[in-house]
Structure formats: C-alpha cells, structure tokens
Amino acid sequence: MRLANIFQLGIKELRSLSRDRTMMILMFYVFTLAIYAEASAIPDTLNRAPIAIVDEDRSPLSTRIVDALYPPYFLPPKLITHDEMDARMDEGLDTFALNIPPDFQRDVLAGRQPAIQLNVDATRMTQAFTGSAYVTEIVSDEIRTFTQRYRAEAELPVDLVLRSRFNPELAKEWFGSVTELINNVTLLAIILTGAALIREREHGTIEHLLVMPVTPLEIMAAKVWAMSLIVFLATTGSLLFVVQGLLNVQIQGSIPLFLAGAALEIFAATSLGILIGTIARSMPQFGMLVILVLLPMQMLSGGMTPRESMPEVVQTIMLAAPNTHFVVLAQAVLFRGAGIDVVWPQFAALIAIGAILFMISLSQFRRSMSTMS
Image 1 (cartoon, rainbow, N blue to C red):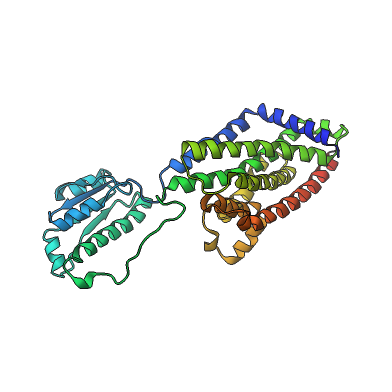
Image 2 (cartoon, rainbow, N blue to C red; image 1 turned 90 degrees about the horizontal axis):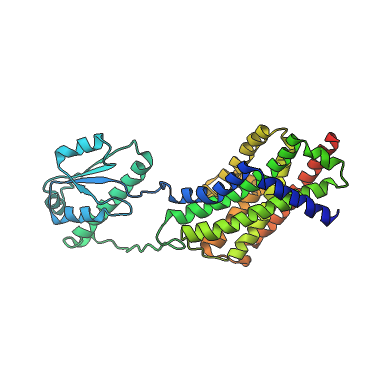
C-alpha cells in the first residue's frame, strides 16, 4: 500500500464531490437548516398554546389561576364570556378553554369540591395531550397554595424542590439541535461514501481504476479518508456556528473530546457506507438499503428515545451498532460535561466496531472488484 496513491485518490474523491451539486446541497442542508429546523420547530412539549378563560367567579382564587397560565407554556389568557367559548373553539382560535363557575372560591373554602370545566381542541393532539396535564397541575397547585392560608391540614408534609440540571430552562432547542447533529453525522457519512462508490460504478470510472497500479485497499482507504474529512469539517462547523452560534446552545463539556469521538464514528460509518455500496447495484438500491439500515440504527440507538425504555434484548443487539456508543458518548460530553475517564468505554467500542466494519467492507469490496475485473 502506497500512501501517495491513497492521497491522490482521495483528492480525486474530493474533486468529484465538489462537482456533485446534489450532494453539496444535501450536505449544506443536513448540517445547517435541518439542525435549525429541528431545534426551532413546534416542540413535543407545550409551547405558547392559546388558552381562553371564562371567569364567572371573579374572586382572588380565580384571579390566581388566570395569572398562573403564562408563557412560554401558554399565550396570555383571553378572558371571554360563556357564550363566546364554543364559537372560539369551533373557529380554532383556542386550544384550551377553562370555565371557572360562579361561587368557586366560596365552595372551595367550604369543602364542597366544585368542578372546573376544561375544553380541549383534540385536533391539536400533541398540545392537547400535554396541555391538559399542565392545566390540571397548575390549577391544583394554585388551589392548594390558596387554601393553605385557611386550612392547616392543607399543608403538605414534604416540600418538593425541583432542580433541573444541564438544561435549567428546559429549552427544547438545546436537546433537539445536538441530537439532530449527532444523528446527521452518521447519516451523511454513510450516504457520501456509499454514493461515491455507486457514482463511480454508474459512470464507468471504476473500470479505469482496475487497470491502474492501485490496490482495493488503497481505493477504499482513499474514499474513507476523503469523505471522513468532509463530514468531520462539516460537523465541526455546524457545532461551532449553528449550535453554539446561531442557536446559542450552552455546551457543557469538551468540544475536542466530542470531535475525537465523532472522528471514530465517522470512520465506522464510512466503512459501513462502503459495505452498503458494494451490495447495492444502483443508486435507487443504495437508497433503499440506507433506509433499511439507517432508520433502525437511529431509532434504537438512543438518539430519539432513551435506550433504557427499550427491551433488554434490543439494547444488547444495538451494542453492535457504532452510533449507539456515539450517542452515549456525545450526550455525556456535550450535555453533562463528562471527561475521558467516563466515556473511554465508548471510545474503545467505536475503535473495535470501526475496525471490524472496515475489514468486512474491505473483504466485500475486494470481492466486488474481482468480479468486475
């Protein structure tokens, strides 16, 4: 193996990629607009939901409830009449409509347990499901706090103090942007490398390489280092300028440590991309295989849902996937400020999985090259 051949072939890959307008647009989108959209899109949690209140009591207790429904969970409440409530819900102006009945405060203090009606527009399913629990909890807390001044038995024996670590403002964009970046590293590394191999096969340039004094190892190593470099630079720029700069996400840990883990993940993912590219015979086949391989990897790696909520057999199987260890590593470093003493098992796993994937891909690539020759 000659390093000069690997370097020159890698430069050829970079030039070929620079002329592929579709891939350049995809790369720009994945590491900029996609991350920004994931961070700033409509969140899974309640955010600025429109709410209207029919306050038929006009008491200090009902005023406390109205004042407790404030941004960012809700828009400032609209005080409406009973006759307006159904019409506004029909027009889609309000997601929630809270009806506080007359003599509500008097009945609460008398222990009569009056009912408050909460109308929910269930067509907005995510906000309706989450918001109902929010409104119930807020109203209950305000009633409990208000009655503590009148009944000693209303006091709770335990005072629960909530402390949110690593994301004290519970901002979704912190988690969403970093998670999207983690997932896109694997996505682009697989697509760029596999597409480069398929593109050479479809254009007939792979036959030119067969008659040159280069080995399959040199060809594959060139593709891996060239595409890895592109993804690594894009990851670094996205983290610094989009996540930290544009979205103002506060990174807790060491960025160089995260980038070192990203480099290992990119190496493993590019090797996997070569493997898929040797199996597929055309770009449509490659796209279908990527969907079949990448979606389960991302869904079950812990990037979308916690691994702890999955069956143990799934957790064990997914330990063979490189992005499982990368997600654990990246979240520990970027979210919780973990050091190498905490994430070294993930580094070791990425090195081992990357080496195994590279050897398997090289064997498959050699077999493919010998068939073509």
